[in-house]
Image 1 (cartoon, rainbow, N blue to C red):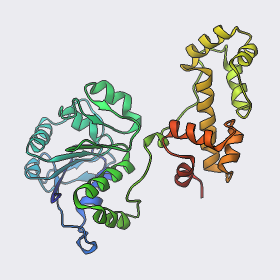
Image 2 (tube, helix red, strand yellow; image 1 turned 135 degrees about the vertical axis):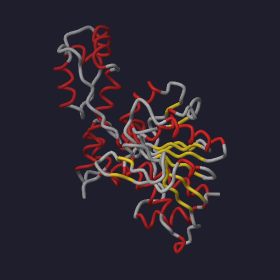
Image 3 (spheres, rainbow, N blue to C red; image 1 turned 180 degrees about the vertical axis):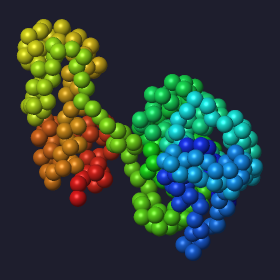
Image 4 (cartoon, rainbow, N blue to C red; image 1 turned 120 degrees about the vertical axis):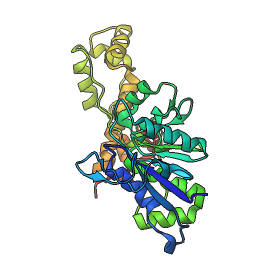
Length: 316
């Protein structure tokens, strides 16, 4: 049961992500049928100002003793650093050992990772920090494609909005769908989203590391709707098929077919955002020929269907 929530702040905590935790757990929603939740804002010392990440101060009402007896310890995003306060790390470990569930928002996973509690466990964090997180915490099993990971007594989320998803998921898990829906309605957010954070990741055009294939890559980009074969591309590059395939892999890190498919998906993503074209029309524009083939590759690369992507990202 979710009766007491303790939010832990350290210097350079992010106020918006902290606000997400406050909005879901810290506001009295009993008039909407949500069971009462005791909400504690905790820092190393009660009443000692904490410098936030954007030039303001937060003053916690509780010290680290506020974690005692909490059903949930929430860790908002914070600026990533080499060291976190040892007393905070110890308090989180103790709370977890005493039965508290731990939830992180965005880069809060780095603070939790420093406690060692994520070792050997699945987790996630913001897509921008994936490589750094893997380097720092190689014993974790990090999933870069999801909005959040529920591993029972530890829940980690990706970026800011994914923190809302994770918090509402926890409410749904512990207090039921009616409570989660009531909170979501007051926040004017969907009670549950589909897909993963791949749909939000910048997908740059793979760059060639040398000049030899640049004309061919540019020509392919200008002719995405056309059929392309490796023999024809090798002929255009004035190479044998074997040399072309080896050079292409060396310079782009992938095969011609996979590279071309990714560029077609990226172009489809742009068309979904900026045009009213139908799925079938976009498929033809991008070289997929059929809507079914577009849907297959789009879901594989982006993580959601073209229809769901357009519903979220299309310009009004």
